Length: 181
Image 1: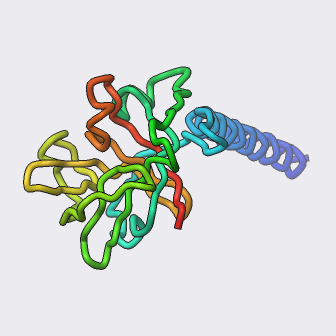
Image 2: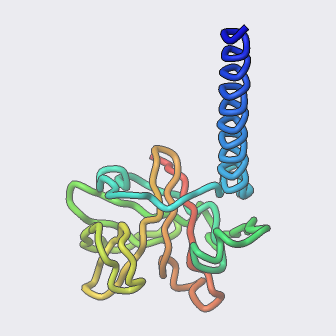
Image 3: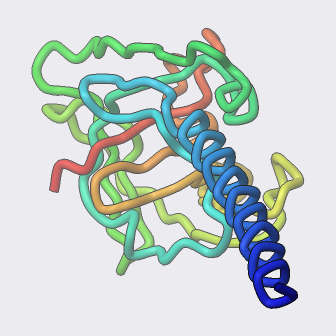
């Protein structure tokens, strides 16, 4: 009889632990799911989060097409309930793009794909960004200009800063880019 009571008690305790753990997992998944569902621009998700550590500079290498612009900072974007925003290019032929050559630490600022810009030397750092005063990945160019690198993967990159001076006065600060090549 003692064994049956002991087994029943053990089953009850284990069952309640499993239920609580499962509830925590479901709650955590729902939180992650909520943060990840932010919307899309041209079929590319705005579901981004700030990189937790140093981003390898080689990941920014290539040609990146500007597909989305958010009028506000990353913090405003992460708190926005409806952050979908679209970007219409004023390029007559082609699209706005930025080109990085990581091995040479050079990039061509945003320009229409049919136009040409001069190469600009940059350095990519991980540390306290002098502009935002936060520890993050950032690109420094022309000695006092900074662009925060929010996140980069093999398809998309999210940058924050004065990437496109023609949109700076409208409050545009967060840029979603899609890798072209």
